[in-house]
Length: 388
Image (tube, rainbow, N blue to C red; front, side, top):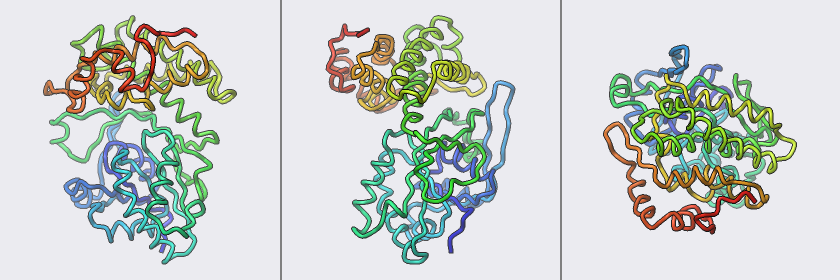
């Protein structure tokens, strides 16, 4: 049978536990995590609960999420059964994980149809990917039978994930491997049109008609602004460990706001009528306050690392620039932040670089123009900080 108040959450990592599991668990759902990490799954099954700590300016707030269990991804029969009987599902496994997940998801969807008929299943896509719904639809088509009615039976619900989850220290993880820290912000923006079933009655779920605009708002302002603060701040204060240290510096804070405001203008031109200038300035004020949250303990390393991805053609630094070029709008301030990113060299608590960033540093030695062309996909002269 179908269990309407059961969510199968693929990915028991930081977003899976601190956001998806937490929101649905606190709204009375049974939460079944599916993950490749067998030790994590075993611990979830042993306890049946885990703790989320909201790290706010006024202090910590703890929430115990109960009624949880787990399935190891390798247990394909159990995963198939979970998909076949779920009321709703979610995905927060990363881009590579998504591709690997498609065969077992497809098996579960086929089993669901055989057992229960034409009962749709909605997937909340909690991934930082543009056009994630299209990508997943294409992968599912490659794995499902040709006569499977994908459009009718599978809801692919795009989201805008605005929750910040810091890297936890080794000591904190040793104390409790299941606990997860997160900021108090707790709104999950979802695509209203993506659902094939009624939108679930879950507190802090925020359905939007034009999800593309809200996904872009996340990339153009939140992702861009957070990274810009790390890159511009690290350039001026290379010894700083935490984001709040950078944003205490007036010059860094103002430069970050200016980059975000320039990108907000591009966003408004890209999605006319969706946002007002006042709304976006208020959003920028809120984000800068959140970026400056000392209690969160968010590190410069976490926010700025993974340079190949974050400077890639479809990610936070380059996407607004490409839109500005199409719209013939200024992007000089964003370009300054991007150029600062090329010299970003923050390390983790053990003094290590992200392994992939060591390869990026080799590319960076070939010059800014090389990075702009071969990493960012921008055919621009190095001196071009266009005000078009």
